[in-house]
View 1 (tube, rainbow, N blue to C red):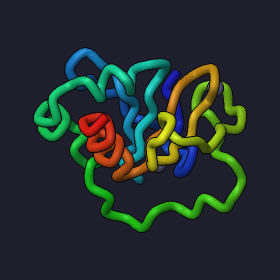
View 2: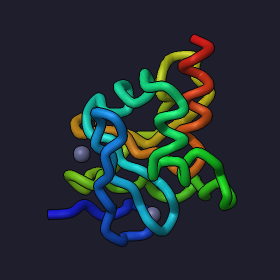
View 3: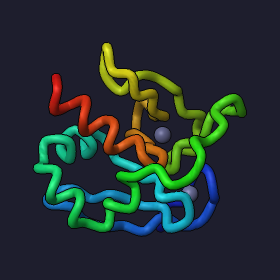
View 4: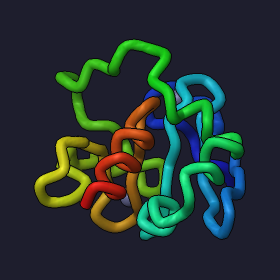
Length: 119
Ligand SMILES: [Zn+2]
Ligand SMILES: [Zn+2]
């Protein structure tokens, strides 16, 4: 069963980047990362990301989503995701399900990548 985008409700497209499987939304360029897939991905060289289908999500080409609304549903359990800093001291706030993984909106991946290289 394929997952659906918590924002657009369209089916996510599963892609592989290096060793990591990512579910990418063809509409909003957001992406879902199961478990610790995002942590693995952040350890990969930037060129691998830039050369992959994930490159569409590296640049924010739409206005940041309005996050004043209700929490996004987790693509796996449909439970409300929590908005929190990805890591302590990290300026990037992401939507995450405590059980299943993390949702990144368009452009958030490159911000996280910059942060993880500085840390
Ligand atoms: Zn979407
Ligand atoms: Zn969940």
